[in-house]
Length: 232
Image 1 (cartoon, one colour):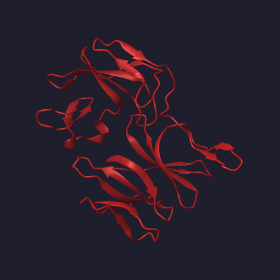
Image 2 (cartoon, one colour):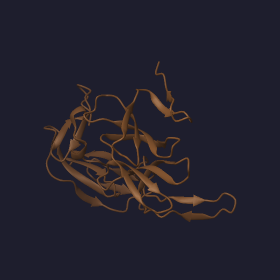
Image 3 (cartoon, one colour):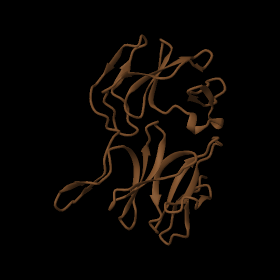
């Protein structure tokens, strides 16, 4: 939500709205493709692809109740793609039936034999990912049941999935460092202070977490030197 007079962005929780720079990420309502309805609802898609309606008083900017499911089976495009749906001002729906393309699975593709083998991980709302330099693990941003993005490390040989703890909102795609142990990723801290932090975190010792200088976009192959972008 944006206030056109002040320009302030707001986040929506189950209790109402708060300024984004003071929002608790654990209390937020997560979803996609929001639409305002004249009936007094905000319609949006939950992480499992269900269209839900949130009763909302736009004048007082208050949430009037929990979101209620409205419709299943709407075609959803890839992670950041749109829903194949249009809603008239009176709430009439026009939509295309189909599966959610936001759910995917990991596979190995042999470009010589053309064979495709599924990896031992369930379908999920996978986003940006990176294969470790040693070829043993995948780092991936994935949507949780609540809709919040999470960071996971997937062990290809064992099928074990390990969550990498993040404290803010994930942004962009994770990248492995040359040691195949630590990750580089971006995070929007909460409260939102208007910057995007670049973090280096170990996947085997999560307490080893370093905030890198602003503008860091990567690490050199030697694993020591930082690659930075000059915003000038």
